Image (cartoon, rainbow, N blue to C red):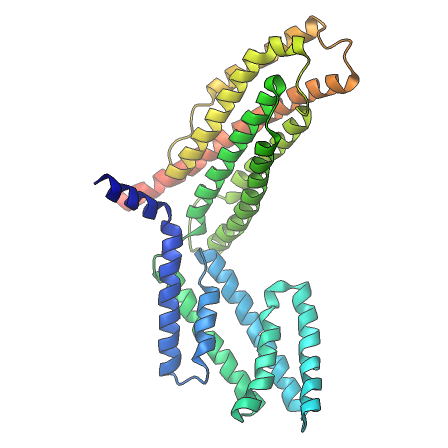
Length: 371
């Protein structure tokens, strides 16, 4: 029973990826069946298009469909026009048309990657007639028809078969980022009194950067869904901006903790710094759990208390002149740390509010379903 439960938990943890695999399979099968039923010349392109536009979320599928259709139509029009207006009678002539077709579209695609399908489409429209003895206009119409079938099929499958909304995915991605920020903060503050593992810190920082890029992408997809009225939920902007500011706070703290504090300062600040590290890391991890589950925001009062204790300890260090006599860069790092923690304090307050908003949205949705 335990093994079955573990297997179920593993599958559940990958339900988003499993849903994508099912959607892609259904889209490819349906696109082939429809293309065959319509007697399209090359059902392969309908199948490939359905694979391209069936993405992890509805918002991403919308963008992929729009970009691929625009590129396909543009490439078909341009490639067809070249083939019709400039007839050729030799391999050298065809080679010249190929250069004329590819070069400008490749340049446009380099400027705007969303139109990259145009180059491929123009080449297909130009070369397929030489293989099937068709005219360029028919080739262009066939290409647009094949891609249209694949795009519509993939988009419908994304809507109807185990649909995955970016608004849901953003919770999990934001939670991962908050946990990585908590790990980084703990490692940085520990370095002030015992040194730090730079290899471990670099791995954490790299993970934060990758997760931030992923979160930004999902945020764009979620806003695309909201704009199309395909999903509801809080505005993703405040959540993304708050997490980005917390990321910046970690960077600033990292610069302030390049080397440990002077020994006499360490002795005075070790306890309050340990409290700050433990409490803030716990709050960030609890906030991550709240985002995943749609639960209420964790209590932030312990964060206020811990930072107040640290501020009192810093005031005592300054009053006793423990920073005097040390190099100026030591004093700069000491004061920069205090400023960075104060900034993080404000941003944690924003995080508390934002997590509460996402919790309320989840509660409202549950209530509407119950009604």
